[in-house]
Length: 105
Image (cartoon, rainbow, N blue to C red; front, side, top):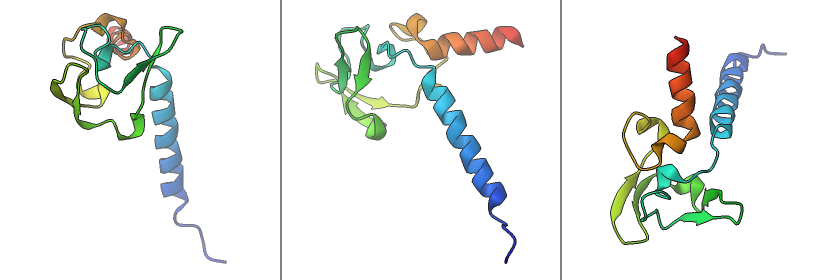
């Protein structure tokens, strides 16, 4: 039987998937990063009766998208806009988590 040389790579892939799952679990689905607070949200942002939001094309969301009003914008990973200013930013759990981490350092 041959030794398993890919074990480390598999462990790393599992680690990355777990980190991604943890990161995604921080989201409170407030919709702020998708324009829910500025009056012209992404056309793919869907609201639920609970007041939470979700993206109808979440897995394919990155790239050029359009708002309900027709304005084109580029959807980016939240990590790329964490330090930018945008309407509703203070409601974002990712922003709050980042602030807490920086305060702990």
